[in-house]
Amino acid sequence: MIHARGLVQTFHTGQGKNKTAVQAVDGVDLDVEEGEVVGFLGPNGAGKTTTLRILTTLLKPTAGTATVAGYDVATQSVEVRRSIGYCSQAGSTFSGAYAGDEVVDHGMLYGMGRKEARAKGQQLFDQLDLDGMWRRMPKNMSGGQKRRLDIVMALIHSPSLIFLDEPTTGLDPQARANLWEHIRQLRASQGATVFLTTHYLDEADALADRILIIDRGRIVASDTSDNLKAAVAGDLVDLEVATDEQVSVARDKLASISTDVEVVDRHVRGRVPRAGKVVPGLLRDLEGSGVSLESIEVARPTLDDVFLSLTGRSLRDAEAAAEADHTGATESEEVPA
Image: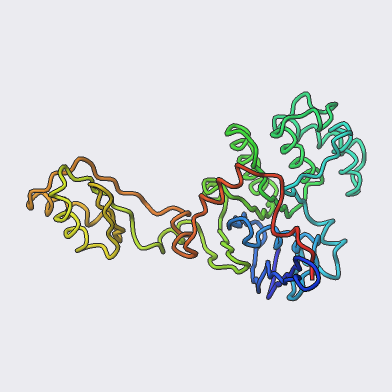
């Protein structure tokens, strides 16, 4: 459904002697098969939105090739756009028009009849908790309501391939859960393919069959969530000892099964492969050495641990940034080369 090789996008910042070339996308290769839900993760500025804009024909790549739904993004942009649904970060609705009119007009642009577009639009309004919003203007809607309206616009023509760029930013937990279920139903009932960019780790974990991680314009990982987490060096074991004197003993015991041990106050932490199998023996060893534990925690690796191990940065920092500012300002605001 999506196949890209060697995608490059270079932007220019500044003017004159201060003009600088910035490579937002640097040789991206990716494949998305029909019926997949793929999560596209990375911090702000990593190249997520720029890649998405190339795939949706909003930017022509500086170099490389990509086909979407069987069409070349550089030479067959009209055919690509007819084949996809796209919900952008910034939104696409006109604030001064009635929401229902916007949706119907959008559906008609895709060749739907007015009656068909109205029926499908009202169905989507019901599914996405927009009851009573048909005759309301977006400027009089809440942020969450406007975001759900953007998603209706992307889905009105029942596309087989849907691009969702940070679709749940600004939604409350109930609305997010509702949208997750709708995304699942799109694949289950229509066989739709979904390409989803998100800062929310739980969202990617819950929805995506496969996860792509991009950093500094390059794909640094592509696999299922479980496989990516399994590749991290073990489960995190956190021992809280009863006294300061016991810290060094606990550290040495944990170091015998872990290569990465740190001490914070009375907490001794380290990553242990297959911790469930070896922790019982560790506890017996600690007890035999006179170490009393206040607590022990064993945490499986998370997607944030995956990203941290691959890039040295935390995806949770990106998630916090997304919550603080979801205006759509991205790396793609530069001037293309």
